[in-house]
Length: 424
Image 1 (cartoon, rainbow, N blue to C red):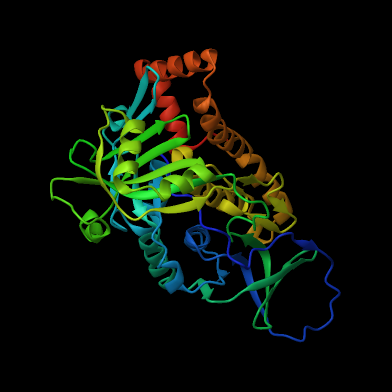
Image 2: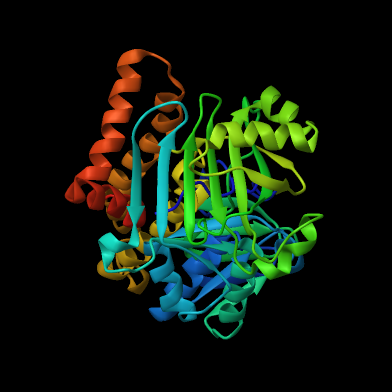
């Protein structure tokens, strides 16, 4: 379990939506057709993980992405990985696949309210609840693993223009005039294009703290304006240029403060001393005041959830299926569980060995239904509940925080939900 992670990136321009379902008339194609068991549309971490999981089971795939690998590796977002996600990545890449900052404790509190919850590795035999990694580092590690797999063929930059489905296959038209024909197409492109202006943005910046007690901690602080999270940074020595002044004794953390758009812009434009004072008031004396702040940026917060994640032989994974509010850092972790669940369903039903692909995807959708309902509902409700000033709501949320802190069984089950998702 983690606190907030950086919001997901915007969808690439080759996102496939909606799919078209049509019979293939059997006429000869005027363009080259490449035959593959699985076509994966999207070469970010979700698409790469899915390809590696399939290859480990002996199945090949062709992965296409409109972005170059160099462009992906310029993305300096911070990802918060749950323990369950770490286990999946370690099984594919080894135990030290990228520099990371472990999250051993998560402190959850509400500004101005009594009560707090402390989730910790002590409840799980001392094993860290999760870790933070740089998006670019993770993409690089996954790409290196893919290069070593003869069963995975990658085309970058290559745009998927159209998906057309037949009874027993799916065809993907690419921007070079060629066509992929596969038993299954996986949409891992990311969130669909947004047509409405975002009402909320995340204010992002690195903060320095004079104290060292935040090391290996994640902070989730609910304010009336919106959730504020602090995450430890991996490889902090490589980021020293981001702030003007930094003592070796200081601790650097990444701040993600979800705010109404106008307020986020106002605080982004504040003088440094004024914004530091505002953050210190929101965090309170127990967490401590930051002493310096780095470059600030804003990220639009959009959420969506597809009701139908399987369309005949096309399946939507990760942010293509759902994008969540970043509170609790569950979006990327939910996407990794999508990958694992899909591959398990394909293997269990032998769908890639001549089995019923449509039935297999139906089983996958059923297995993922509870997790995809519970986690998005939780991340959607938390900001609303903690922004309320109604006395009954204030009393209820403080009581829940104290109960989670004092009742070990309840605390462990809640933490386990955030680390591994809802059971199927």
